[in-house]
Amino acid sequence: MREMLTGMPWWVKWIAIPLIALVVFGGMIASVIGFVIWLLFKVLLFVAIVGGLIYVVRKFMSSSTSKGDW
Image (cartoon, rainbow, N blue to C red; front, side, top):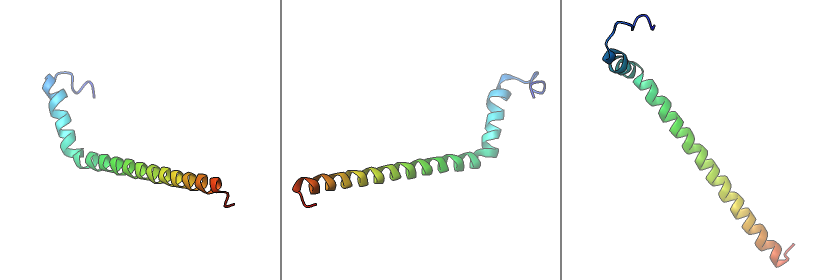
């Protein structure tokens, strides 16, 4: 590949080829980025729900043990 680009101007290497790659693979890149963002949102939602559950259970356990109901 390096031999093919040896005589080319700088703008072909640094502007034209990346633009062609974005046009050809743009949809795939966008879908991968969208999937990563969706997955990150799901992970954060899971962490928030589990954290809330742990908080509620600890609050309930501390309030029930301090009253001596057990």
